[in-house]
Length: 476
Ligand code: 5AD
Ligand code: SF4
Image 1: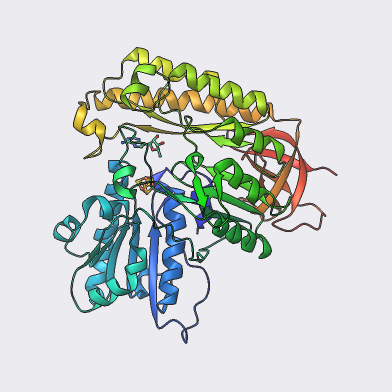
Image 2: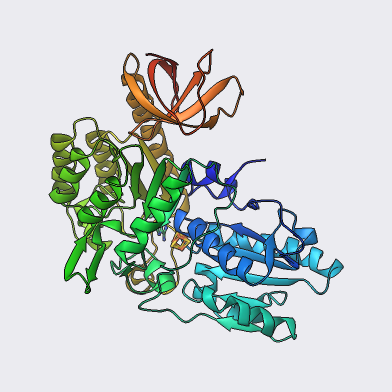
């Protein structure tokens, strides 16, 4: 059985791997009279939200189960980013209908972006859904459950300008005990033309810096060694601490978290190229424990397409940003998101994307073909005019290009020694450890006679590589 970490740390966007259930611990039937089952889809933010939902449900007397068939409450935390993501959820709902037929008292709730996008339409379309709860309404879950228990359909899809769930301590679901996600902001104000997120997650708001530092400190004190600060656009984090008369930018926040302990690694995701400042880059360079890795989605390599996408940077501007990163941190890893076949994209635009990939030498990319989402700027303004076969062919070329770049990037590391944080056994053998380098590359190496544990740091010299793994041996 895969655990949550497998999804979030590897290919979150790969829908085929998503949606497995997870549960934190054996439940005490004295404390938890009822059971909930939750599946998550989509981005890391959604996985983090499910941990907040779990905390709220624990408070309400629901314990988690991995088995939907024994659950009183089944929740799907959904994603709307592409049509395929929504289709996956619809298919799951059909499966749950069968379980519900056998257990009529069971409640089914849809959470997250699809709930927000479809609102009460969901109740009409998918007759088996009892609750529809948007991403800013999780605090009202106890009341909504009560309502649904009386046979009414319960809906809350109100978006908020303030909600950050700052005071809720997430219940870590299926955690490896080493790495954790910490949400630092919610929503998005960017209005990229293709993207549904501003509509499903609402306006951008930053979480109280002190509550973030507290959560990270608590994690470190309970044995965690790595936190990933999460937001749709972390670089526009901005918090005004009125009590202290201070403003906290993302660079400042990064520093505060890095200062908790040199033994706590700090990562973050996702950065919008327009917002990542020199300040952030210098802060990264200054602290060894801030990982040298930036996910910097380019989306397209063509200035004309970037303009239509409303990304607010040009090809040249993005290239200069890549140069700047490498100048300040020559060893920094960079990855990307790329969309093939956006409205009006020509072969020339597509060639620009391929050459941009060569320029940035991405270690890894998430690659998609364009999927029109109702209500977005692009859906309202432009025709989705690139034929599907063309989109798929271009995507294939992008994937092949990335495979070569990844191969090259991993091959280049052979012979080098990296500090690796051990996350657990390797997938293939419990005689091998699996961990990550600062650059976020997976490193696998034999345990040998060394007395090491997960959560330890170890120096590993790489002797060979595949497209997505470095193989090495421990060096002293
Ligand atoms: N079609 C295809 N890909 C999309 N993404 C966002 N919206 C769409 C869409 N409508 C991709 C972007 C984004 C990533 C999370 O998903 O590349 O960065
Ligand atoms: Fe999916 Fe985007 Fe919502 Fe995350 S924010 S769940 S990626 S639609």
